[in-house]
Image 1 (tube, rainbow, N blue to C red):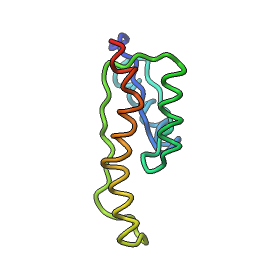
Image 2: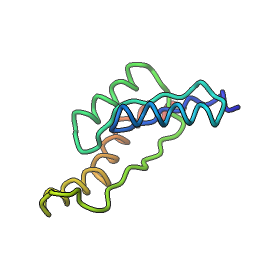
Image 3: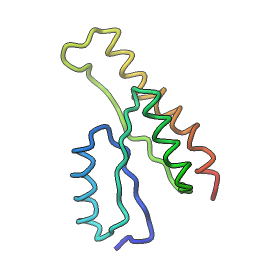
Length: 107
């Protein structure tokens, strides 16, 4: 059991989030898992996610930026695909880390 850790999964899809959290809790035996919606392509989503963490007073011990986009989605123009990849792979995680820095430095 890993009941000492509280894991928050940031995920774009609410349906996928519920599935991932259920599986994580099942495999770890912990009940301290949750998901929060986050789309790293959308600045307002990043701000809302970070604000929710701050407002709840959650002190973060670890932040893993694991999102990534490799191939452009079907039907996206080249510039759109580049913008999407840049947002998800660099700008979004950079902004998220910046906004959560006070919570990370709390420890």
